[in-house]
Image (cartoon, rainbow, N blue to C red; front, side, top):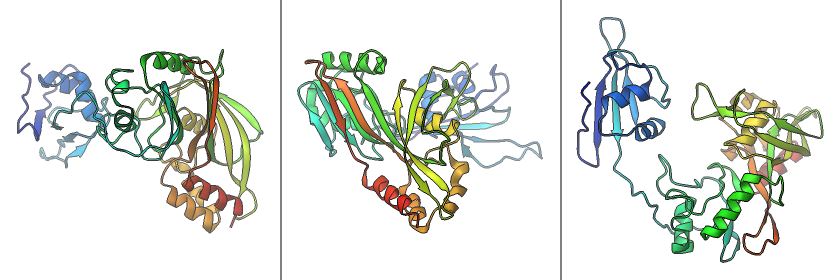
Length: 351
């Protein structure tokens, strides 16, 4: 089958495809791979996830078509007669560039740097976020010592936080430090001192003072940008304990502050595990949208603070690790950022 060629200028390229039905699959990503001779499968997947692929569906009524809409799922089923449009942004340099982005540095020496990540800061370049990331900031701050560490896209990065999760992160400043820190994070404190602690504001009050969620995590079967507890997924273990209880307007518990520690490091692990346990994070529109009605039980002050939050109420407050050179056990803690501190105060006031 003949492939389709990109059209347009380098800054505005577009590929139009009409599904014939003989592509051998109904999956969007596989159909695109058959028709496109210029784009790799990984590139096509990244374009889908970034919202750069749209589809005009042909209806069965007098051969009319529906409006064009972006599709974000590589497994989306297409049908003969559908018209697929791919918008291909200009090529981005494989090597991230340094950018003068302010960093809240908690600790720094010749081997590592610990920062207090603010909300809204993406950790490393990816589809839709090619600049303005923590990696860009680290390159500008640390210079050439980061080059090549951990791969082109993630120099110095040995772990990550979600875009809107705040708190402590460590990055390596040389290859030896990168190897040591990577090994510690892979071990998750089973045989060493490494610990990661999080503060999570959740809906409801667990029935016990502390507990563990031990449930495997894998990609969501339908919403591929999400994770889910699934049989056959990768091992995932989260320990938690109740730190504070918040009552609603009726005097009954409506939310709680949990301290969580990770024994594994899966994507969105705390968010997925707490939602699975029936206590999703406050403000989490991905894993706890059905709990939005709970806000009616909050006092006006707390409801206002939650509305202003605009993100999941999760903060990485604790980081303990062995220094990669001296083997000294280092420990850092950071308090809640202003938005979560305001939420805590408002919830505690129950008014």
